[in-house]
Length: 376
Image 1 (cartoon, helix red, strand yellow):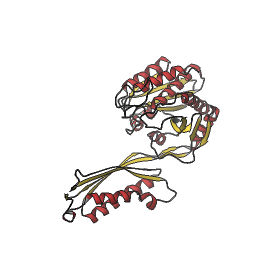
Image 2 (tube, one colour):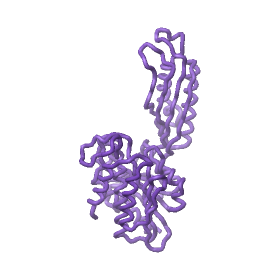
Image 3 (cartoon, helix red, strand yellow):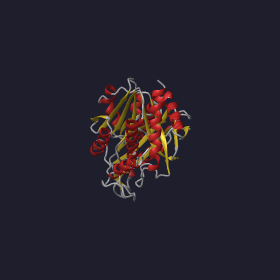
Image 4 (cartoon, one colour):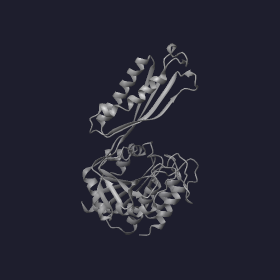
């Protein structure tokens, strides 16, 4: 397998990153390569999504392989010659690598591999917080391409290159956002008895938020609540009239999600009442948990063994989130972590996809296809 062409594609993508729903040049590049390899292409699903279909034999069985294609809104601080040319945009999560891997799979299947069925190459926009997977589904992805199973990978710097992990059931958490705003009259710092202190109420709420998961949920129910931003005050001698708390809640079950939302709401309203201030609460349910299906998770591990990867079931899921969850809610499938160490962590400004991983990813996808069609 000649990997240099795919590595060059990966580096071209890294140098020209685009944000969610604006991956126009990325989509053109993907479509151009697929068309050149004789693969039927549809563009424009969810604005910048691209789907390729490769058919062999007479079977109608269809297997979907997905890669996310968007970048992050951050500055690339790498030193490689192919660092980002677009200020404030960087492929710091490795979606350039995922895209290149799936293009490599398409090339190999188009050239060399015999199978009986259809392979659907799903190049999905806007994974980073914009739910591109959900939009593709809502715009008819699985009506036009009725996949019998779907698979995706993500590079994982916590695992060594040459390894792969997944598991049946939850593998990535649901990720929600909460916003709390507090309103008082404000006043002089030397006269706190003449006003309501939103700063003190805010401080109590931050402490309270860090006790919910340990006291409201079953001890074996994994979840985390993190306060990520507090905004309050403009001067050393003023009690502010407004404060804001922002954070994230992550969990794996709908029941935990419901309970966390209810507990946060009730506690902040109680604290606000005690302090004589007003409070507003906004809880935004973002991505649900990513939940693998049993058969497909086992097949993913078998494919890894066939690809000579060191494979194992992960001991516990990750509390990060992933919009492939929507595809797994619609179709059976599995999501895997592909070892990519040595590497900077994901979302690090110096991150650059480890090109040594590309061959492993291509071989894993190829073996997924082989196992799926041989299991018919």
